Amino acid sequence: MTSSYGFQGRAAVVTGATRGIGRAVAAQLAAAGALVCVTARDGDDVRRTAEELGGIGLAGGVADPDHPARVTELVLREFGRFDVLVNNAATNQPYGPLMDADPDLWRTAFTVNVEAPLRLVQQAWRGWMCEHGGSVVNVCTEGAEHVGPHVGAYGTSKAALLHLTRQLAGELAPKVRVNSVSPGLVRTEMARFVWEPAETVIAAGLPLGRIGEPEDVARAVLWLASDAAEWVTGADLLVDGGTRVRPAHAAPVGRGEPGDRPRTPRG
Ligand SMILES: NC(=O)c1ccc[n+]([C@@H]2O[C@H](COP(=O)([O-])OP(=O)(O)OC[C@H]3O[C@@H](n4cnc5c(N)ncnc54)[C@H](OP(=O)(O)O)[C@@H]3O)[C@@H](O)[C@H]2O)c1
View 1 (cartoon, rainbow, N blue to C red):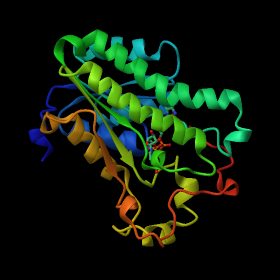
View 2 (cartoon, rainbow, N blue to C red):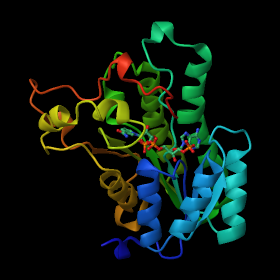
View 3 (cartoon, rainbow, N blue to C red):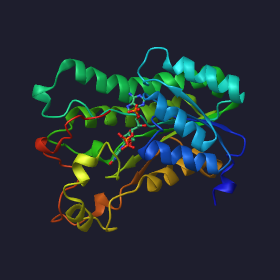
């Protein structure tokens, strides 16, 4: 099906692509014929993933000041073009009520989840997309619509990313389309503290009867990034197993308790 998506020979950057949703996106893009560049902080993981997918990689945090310029220079040098940008890397720190939020961690949430995607779009626009066009997909979250007791900074930053998506869609049309996906609970490391202790209960409360897999979200990202969505911009696509339409009495999703946090949280 993705052969009709028009990715053959196009160059794509996926941030945070060594595991979880980002890796699934990069793998599906590579399988659809795209030239793929993956990024993440762990250099060994980046090298391994790039090799496995037959692409290239850049180690570094998306919020590193020189990261957007470095990744843009790399793809233009190696691939000669920069057609697709998937802003997937994110942090879910600080965890806990906002009244106790550490100011540095709060700033980090916005730097990683909002500012870095913007700076990457700016570089992609200046380096390639302004002249040749392109497509951007930002990975938000279904949870940005809700008030969560422990993920206020994450949710607030993702709500900002949602609006950034619409703002950029307006600014960059018609050359560049900018859309987002909002996943529900997906089986990844970032969300392990939510799904691992209660998967059966959570799945039973979802209309589609299971939590998400990274590939579920990746398929939606690919569609939005592709020519098949050529008349779609500024849209947010929910990929949540029906979280929003579950009966009101069903178990809530994504409400982890503080004690459920992994000992060494990532992101
Ligand atoms: N899983 C869910 O239930 C869920 C639900 C809604 C939305 N999302 C969103 O989906 C996206 C992907 O999350 P995931 O669940 O797939 O996470 P994950 O499995 O923990 O993977 C995160 C990836 O991003 C990289 N990464 C983390 N921080 C980074 C940074 N500052 N700079 C560059 N790379 C970074 C990680 O590698 P390194 O650690 O080596 O950097 C890894 O490759 C995020 O935007 C998240 O907010 C997830």
